[in-house]
Structures are given as structure tokens and as C-alpha cells.
Image 1 (tube, rainbow, N blue to C red):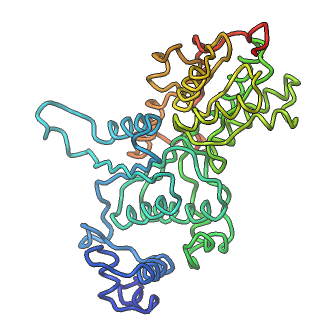
Image 2 (image 1 turned 90 degrees about the vertical axis):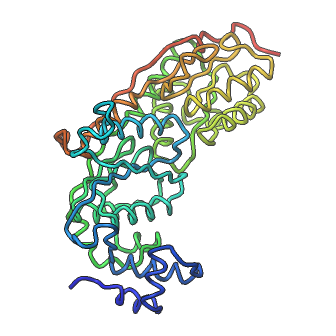
Image 3 (image 1 turned 60 degrees about the vertical axis):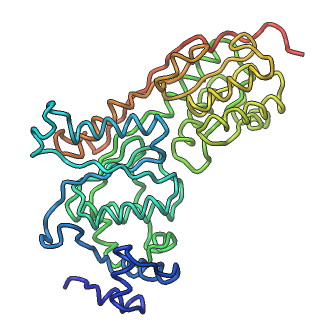
Length: 385
């Protein structure tokens, strides 16, 4: 039997009117009360039928696109490509050819795990036709379990789920792990575990980072600093693994204490690159190359080096990752790894619409490409004083 508003109210210990206020967001409700209501909603899997409440089985024309930061070109390029597939411009008339189009709703999570889960719940209530999650995943067993539960609920409700730029979901965790993320007991966990994995369009972050480090090694660099991204992101771990694999194969002491001292974690922003470069120079003034977490952080690295009176690449080589549009126009042009973000986003959009057959095994790996430019060169022949 379908779960009713009264069932949720009874579980939360509040009135049906309070539940309605929480779900509609049209009246102030105490935070503790709101938390109890939302926990009851999750435990009972209560779904609000949004605008299509009169058609319980109907799917909406809405497709959700989750990004960490829409202001970051990495996510903006993918979101734009996804939206172009979902709602292509068909003519100057504005109203032509809209029958088969969908409405793309971009949800900016800010990298906050709880916000990601909240958006997925809201999209389920709106009976979204599909959901695309972009960017690396947060490495937390509890969050991964809670995320898997929500995605499988969306799929059971008929929505297509596509991961773009993040790895496939981990194997289903125990019920307790999902509860640890705040989702409460999940009575349908068995059914969720039987559901198929979402389609994943993954990036070859390991291979790209390995190739980038091999390039610097081939130039003669051995004292390399590495500015990694946030420690709790899959993208960070995969790129760091590729870097270490290249060092290990070259016998460059990947696991040594000295190598570990020259690996710093930070953000994917310019400020993190700037501050990280200064810290690396403090730890080892003789460092000859710095690998940045991404192109944006690499700009910060370049600025810090210039402020220290160091030349790029004569004194220190610098690399980025992703090949964002500004990388080729930086001064000097940035050596980086190209990930075809637009193509990946477009493919994710087609998969979300069902316009393209899923890849074999449900996983498509987007290959990366080394872009050698003017920011890298052999290390200086003399030490810097």
C-alpha cells in the first residue's frame, strides 16, 4: 500500500500539516523538526508527486544535472554539453521542435555530500526523467552507500542515471553503512541491491597523470612537487596513483619519505595552487617541476613562481590537468592533459535521453591526451641559490 502523508507524520511524531510545511517549504519549521520529518520521509520512501501529482506513473520532462561548482569551467563545459543534447536549439523561432525536448536543471552541490543527496531526493519527487552526476565522487563509505540507495530508487522509478567523470558505484554496502549517512533504516535494501549499476562515462585520470609524470621524467626532472586535489575525492586519488606509478616504474623513489614530503593536498582553485607552490618551495627550494591538481591550480602555481622571481620553465616546469580553454593561452602555454569534457558531456546527455545505446558493461572510459606546451623544459643545469 502506498505510503501517505499521515504515515510520515506518525513516524516523525508531528502533525500532517507540519509534514506538508516541511515538504513544501512554504512555512518556517524548526531545524530539529525538519530533520525528523526528512528522516521519516527517507525511512518510509515517501515520494511527493510534484506538479504531476495527478498522474502518479507519469515522468516529467525534467533532467537533473549535478555539478560541484558551475563557476568552474570543468563542470560548466560538461553541463553546457549535456544541456545542448537535452534541449538543442532548433531554430530562430524559439518554439520550434520542442515536443521531444527536456528541461535541464543544473544543481550546484558545492561539493557538499548532504546537498548531493538532497538534490537527488528532490529530483525523485519531481519524477525526473533522468539524472546526470558529474565530476569525482566523495570517498566516504557511508555517503557512497546512501548515494547508491538514492540512485537505485530513481532507477526503480523509471529515471535513467548516468555518471559523467566519476567511477562506477562501489559494490552495495550493508544497511548499516547507509544509515550512517543519515538515511535511516532502508526497508527496500534488498531490491536496491538487485538493481543494475548506473551507466558510467569515466575519465582516464590514472593514465593521464602517469603520462604527464613520464613526460617530466623524460626531460630529466627528479625533484618534482605534486599539488593534489582534496584528499576525499576519487579524481584526486586516481591522478595521484598515476603519478606514483610513473615514479615507481622509473625508480624515482615514489614511496620514499622525500617524495611524500613533496605531495600536498589542496583545492582545485587558483589560491590553492599559489599557496601550495610557496609551501613546496619552502620544503625544497631545489624543486625543478610542479604538477598541479588541474589547470586552474596551475595558474596559481605560475603566479607564485613569478612572484618569487623564478622563470617558467627555465627554473621550474609547471603542468596542469584537464586542458581547460585558457590553458593554451596562458603565458607560457600550459603543458597539461586533455580530457574531452564537451564530448563526454554530450555523450552523457545522449545516454540520459536514451538516444545512444549504453556501452558494453555499462562503462565507457574517455581517454586522455598529453598536450606538451611551453611550460615544461629540461631542469636547469645548476642549482638555484
